[in-house]
Image (tube, rainbow, N blue to C red; front, side, top):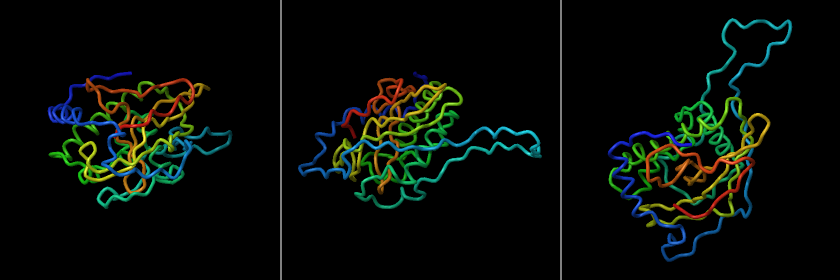
Length: 253
């Protein structure tokens, strides 16, 4: 599912520069062995999607004077963490931060509003620390966030109204530490590709992928949703499938 939009000039120039320098993870060791992730399994974390419809009124119940439907709102993930130094803590998919991040991502998809997923997206302040490129803040805004917003729109067009989030599968055994010096990075981080967002719609289980999650201070964040590098700036849904799909593949930055 693709939604076209003309990219800003900064996005086009920075995307071209990064396309040349993107390298497979196997070449990111910088001469020293990578630490192994503590888990050797694919984790499946269940989350609960926010309620967007008021409960059915039973006979004899009072009619509320105001709307009973709460306004949707993002959940906090790790407020202020992007401005703090990086750590080598391996992200925990059983944490409240991860559950809140995936709930926010699902809210963005089901409403079509990417701003709901801002807490789940890699922090701009952390990206400025991470990247050894000119104007990292502009790259974050005009490329990373711009592409993410397009991908949220594409996923919104795929998921029908009333779909419910079931779980998010992260292939933790395929996570790898990306060393400084790889992919124009000055700081290392954990990376895992191909997590799966599993949901039900009309009684059938379906799924789509998250192209790339990376860590900051022991929390997984979405950095590429539909696709890492795209020849055309357009919204992409990563490998939609009937059923839970297949996590992966590993590799990438």
